[in-house]
Length: 78
Image (cartoon, rainbow, N blue to C red):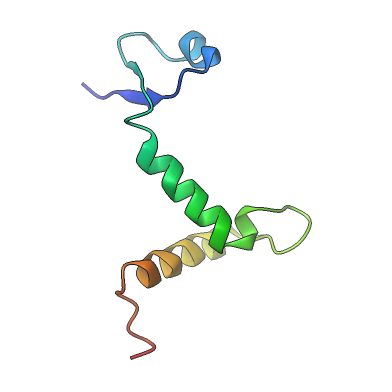
């Protein structure tokens, strides 16, 4: 069975079925870390007025480029 991990925000309890909901910070820690990383390095994830992506494809490529850079698997600079 698949589960949905969330924090303790009350609205999740009314939307997600109880048998699928796990409310814990331990399961959301990694996701929140990545969200913070994206907001820090990618301006297009922070503001809607400037530096935003008009195409989902460009957002996808920006995230992939950042992940390759952070994982040291970006070989175009070697």
